[in-house]
Length: 274
Image (tube, rainbow, N blue to C red; front, side, top):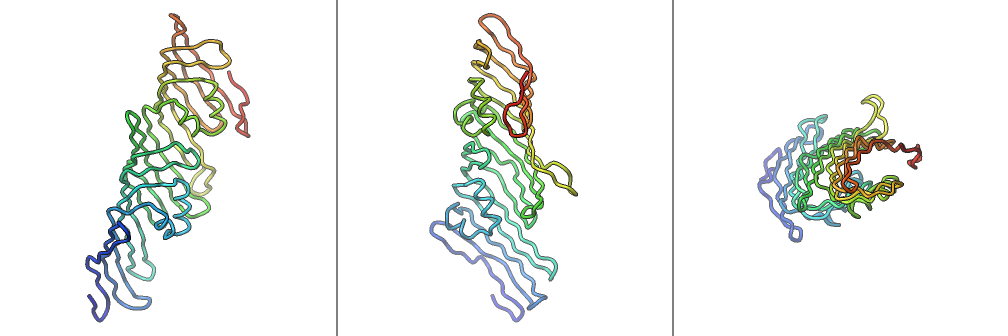
């Protein structure tokens, strides 16, 4: 609809291939005083090369970090109420999406949950991947996105993660070597945080801290010449240290308990263990 001072869009619908798109909104006024409110929605937007090509550079960098595939529901808003009040935000609902994080390429399948983007921040709420008994859930907030000093906070709650070759391939090199030395079979639960160090005035590098509980059928820790069965273990993992709070298991009919730690040097090579 056209008026003397603006335009109204009412449920303007279209398709791009199999993707349905609807546009609503209005604009009024002219020049510096122009105001508008647009809403673009789709319930079945495909994560493909066409969508990637339409993204801004910062959004492309985020895409490249996770390499997502599948389909999403999108609600995009663009609002201007004055020359100094312009807002953009996007709400994304994941629908059976697959992805893997470039820095920890563990395959995530069947992803559901919500992402929210505005000009300054990104948040993820109740993003869940489930496969059989395995469940991984994360909540995250990144502020200052697109600046030189973004602030990250990510919480990860993972349960029944198989201690298998898929996990081994995803681990950073230094932990992959340690993992191989344990020769473990079983599952792990992880409660982890990824966070920016420092504070808002002086943001430091990103770090992480994870509490890990393992339940194993067997464990053969090098250099010990024993194979433990019915194993439970509790560890804390950070960039500099693997702290073994306790490891309990059976060697034959005898109960065995271990504690200790492994410290990493600045180059992430194993420096010492005890």
